[in-house]
Length: 340
Image (cartoon, helix red, strand yellow):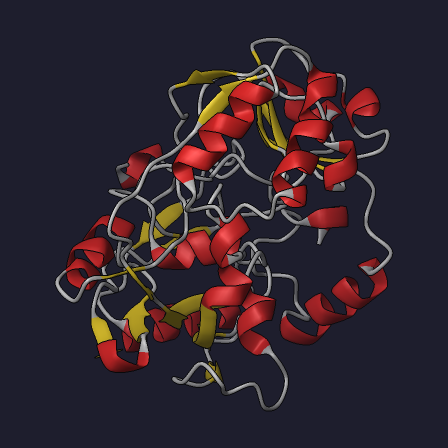
């Protein structure tokens, strides 16, 4: 994606800058803050449709030049990288030591580590390894005033103090920018395979998921999973790529696994499903008994759709965090839940 193609939820910035290193990025942010100019952080640009349209956007700060390995300790199963490194490049480095970062992203050649953390990207491997909140150990951030801060550490057992790394996950660049991250990595499995199933009806999803739980099948038990699916009347199919990338309208639904929402692609053990359509989605119906976050929709529909849905019970705390980290409302203003 070129700088000229960048638009956040349909909003085109006045300028795009790509700092060469962390110090330059902090200086750029400090200057924007001093001028009270609204800005946003962008990595590979794979999730620019996610979220509300920002209320204001003067400058996009790209992190794609921040691609260094800061520290790698294979024996400790941790790696510290700058936020602009892509998953494809990280995969190559980790593979040299038989390791991997088990986060599923839609485009490993474009998706950056910082972008995946900021959007809380995950896929089917969440069932085995958790989300980014389970994999992040430490983080280095740039606050909206340009100040660089650290949270967490470089070892997996370090959990002392306020959990700033977990706060960074899913923050969508509305509190600060991620410039470095320390992540837990895992050994590469000797063999890997995916199983996808087409069930006869939606109502078959819950008992099928229950059968997996009852038999205590580990995600790695490929042959056993295929047998169980056939027993449940499923037809095996080619596994889809992580997430859902086609369709003018795309929404990710979440509900307890016992009430897995209906969708074109579903991960029943996670309680996650994707609804994909070319025409408008009935979000009111989808949000009865589930949460629904719209990841993509036509630009013309943005003024009529709340992509996040009703704010959660923790919204007062979220608003207080925004006021604390970004009192002038310059960092991706309005893009997050409830217009934060």
